[in-house]
Image (tube, rainbow, N blue to C red; front, side):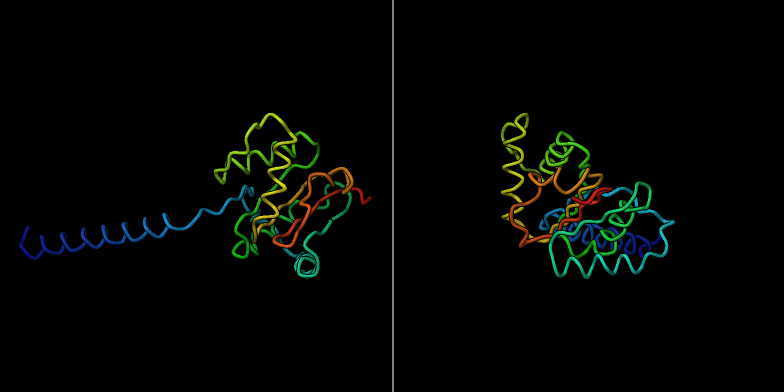
Length: 175
């Protein structure tokens, strides 16, 4: 190895070390975005009109309900919306709203992901109370409540105030 080759190797190694340290400091200082979205559907096409309606509706009201028969793609539409607007939200969370137990489990998983301790996780009332407080105190979130039996069945689980984020409810029934 010549002296020149040795100098080049040292310069490259120093540069890589500088970049790594800079990247580490960048990510260390930024809180991690929490999301549990499934892998993006690479075959999702069309539905631009529906995606635009979701966007416009969420600008007017922080909570929207998407209704339709089973299998029409409500979940896929909501997930695609989340991916297209990913940079606008600090947290995006998909919650299975088929039952009260699944809703509570979804909230607990979210709390664990963002590093919160909500006390007695075995008490659904405690979890729900902490979740509602979190909604009131945080901004720029999108929660998708999927597979709800209707809006009435999840009313107690929805944020009390939605001044800070957005909620999409997917259901087969409108109540």
